[in-house]
Structure formats: structure tokens, C-alpha cells
View 1: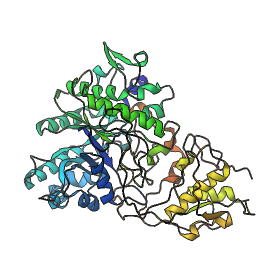
View 2 (view 1 turned 120 degrees about the horizontal axis):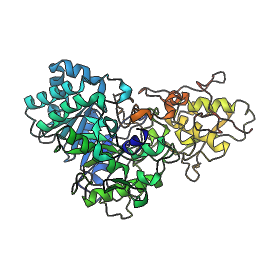
View 3 (view 1 turned 90 degrees about the horizontal axis):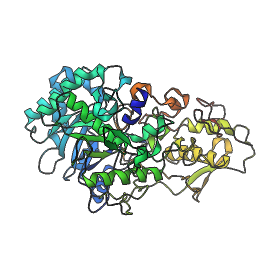
View 4 (view 1 turned 45 degrees about the vertical axis):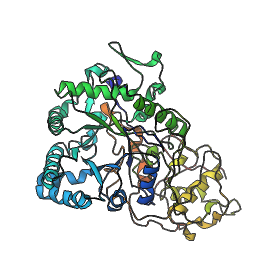
Length: 530
């Protein structure tokens, strides 16, 4: 059964460039960030790159305002914490539709196409908390949409994780829905079929590679040779993503709903925080995916058609939970400030194109906080770096990440600068008992970049980081949970408060946990050679 899961489990994301774009491409847009980019800049980026569809995880007013008057097709999400009240009281669904759909309709309104009720509500990690709430919530939302007069234009579905299906034979053609939810999946399929709505599934091939040391690396991409492809009664699968799609297709056939369309709600590749998470692999993944979509040759079980795909995601989010892994904050095809990370040809023609980045991002001053090599008091440097990392984002320092191979001075500087930038360059945030200093020259070196923070747009997700954007709480088939889920490092970096969190370092303070700079896979400890 473990081997069966290896090719099934995946997660995904995507994106699109200027000019001609594959029409089936959309992008996810999450807001779990300390300094979110102005939504107006985000919308302009989407338009400049020719992307026609966007999926958001909550009805954020500033985002919906920015999307108003555009022709961008919008899938708006409802967080899991809303499911109980939506399922129990129709009046709650009516109020939600009135506030978040009706209020944005009209000549210069939002081009809503889908309401996504919940986000991966059947993850095994939730222990069935939302199993009996999701479908009633979907029905109430649809009823309210129909009552408001928008039922012909706006569909209702729920984004599900790839762990809702499995196969007993390692072959996609034998796919079935997970036994513990087979009945409710049948009911949801009936709802989708009756209302001509799509089955939305999130697939991330990166996680296959991340979680399974023996997983064939090429199979996570789309240029896999025949020698390592999967043979299913003569049908060849060169990518784990295609195998996932057809396992779902087979499960739909078994459930007697073979004609339900499929949307890949999330698919992508992170660019930092893990040895496999880098811009080279992300470029390789997206290049193959976009070519696959453009060809429209489908999969063995659904030839000549390929699902619509929403790339995950538009921007990096530095306050996402890292329970699934240190890469969680680096899924964006753009950095947090709207800079393109790697070439991407959204037309699927494989041309070496650069995406159009965000314009006029309001940066803070051009200055950085770094380790002061002239400091005479270095005895507590380990503690100070650890403290900084417990109050900011040091995921670029973990093994295999972009700053992991730097020297001790640079590693300390990374921690100090991230804390300083997230504290809006408050002067007191760059002291650390005299071992840090402010400089005007960019200390970036090689792959290790030192960012300058942008001024916050005041738009932050009102969803918790565990229920909003992206692969949140991990629940993988057959207990393939990331080993990092029980690591104290996770909690240390999991800050999700939307309020200002800057606290000046005091010399008598002890870090929440120890963070030495000589890094190992499961402990982020700072053993500086002084």
C-alpha cells in the first residue's frame, strides 16, 4: 500500500506570462504574509501576464475590490471554520452570499465563477471534523446563490486533497475513493453532477519527492523517460500528476459519475526551504506542466482534454504554517514583493520568457541589518541568533535552502536582517546586544538573498494559516506525514499573528528553542565557531 501511494500523492501549483497564455491556467493568491503586497499591484500582475483565472482562499474585501471591474474569473473560497455554521443555518449562507457575492455583482463587479466551500476538509488529520458538514454547507451556499439569482453563472464545489482517492493495485485504472469517505464522496459527486460543477483536487508532485527518499525524481516532472514510467495495462504514465488525475478519473467511474469535469485547484513547486525546493526544479516543473496543458492531449483515461489548473501560487507567504515543511513559505512564482523568480512561458511553447513583475512596490529604506564582525562580545551570539529565528522567518537557513551553505557570519546576518525587515526596519530591531549593525550595501551573495521589506498594504488573511492558502495541515495517504510535523522547529517558526510582533531583544532573554547555525535536517541549531 505504501508503494501505491508513492505515485498517487502529490500537490501542485501553476502560473501564466504576458501575451498568449494557455487558457486553462489560473493562479492561487494567498495572503498569509507579514507585509502583503497591495492587491491593486497583485491584480495588475495577473492582468499583465495574461492570466484569466484566480483562486482566493477567503472573501478579502481589499482583494475583491481590486478584482472588481476586471474580466478575471474568480473562484472565492470559504474557510473550514465556517462550515459548521453554514451547514446548520441557512440564514448564515444567505448572509455570506449577500456580503461576499451580491455586494460585488453588477456592471463593475467581480466576475465570480466558483465558490469553493472549505479547503481540503477531508484530510485525515482533521479526524472527520468536517466530514458531515461540507456537503450541507455546499447545498446551503448553492441555495443562497440560486435565491440571489446567480445560479446560472456561479458554481459551487469544494477543493479536496489527493488523499481522497487511492488504488489497491498501484495502477491508476483501479482508483477508488478512500473507504472511510466513499459514501460521502458519492453524495458530493451526485451534487456536482446534478449542478454541472467540477471536482476540484489539489495535487503536489513535490511532496512525493520530499516525503519518499526512494521516489524516482524524474517522475515528479513531465520529462520522465519510458524506462522509469508507470505501465498500466499498456498505458504509460510519465508523471505522477497524470497518474493522480487518472486515479481520480477511475474513482469517479466506480462512483458512477464518469462525466464530472476536473479542476486541479492547486499545483506548483516551492523554490526554497528544502534541497529539492529551488528555482531550477520549479522552472522544470512548470515548463513541463504548461507544455502538457498547451498540447491538450489529456491523459490515458481522459484523452484530448486536460483539467484546468490553478498554479500555487502567486506570491511567497512568510507567515504560513511550516508544519508540512520549511518550504511552505516559498511556493510563489513571484517573491513576496512581486519579483519573478525564474523564466516561465505561460503559452506552453517552451520559450525563455520572463514574467511581468509587480510595479511600484513601496519598499522600505535601502538598508540591511547584518552581523557586526567588530563586536567584542560574541559569547551569546548563538542565543541571539536563535532568538531572532524564533521571532522571524529563517527557513532559508535549513539544509538545502538558499542560505544553508553560507559561513557563520552570513547565517547570523540572515537571521538578524529578517527580524529587522519584518519589524519595519525599527532601529532597535538591529542591535542584539551590539552584535548587529545597519549597513547600506546589499549583503546578498550567490543564492542567498537579503530582502528589503515592503510597506504593508494592511491586507492580511483573516483565515488561520492552517485553513487558508495552500497545502496546510498535512495528512498524507498511508501515514506518509512529513517528519517535520513533530519537530519543535515548526512551532518556533509558526507565527500567524496579524498584529505587530516586534520586541527588542533583551540580553537576559532565552530563545524558545535552540537554533545553532550548524544545521541538521531536524534541528535548527546555531553552533557558531567563535
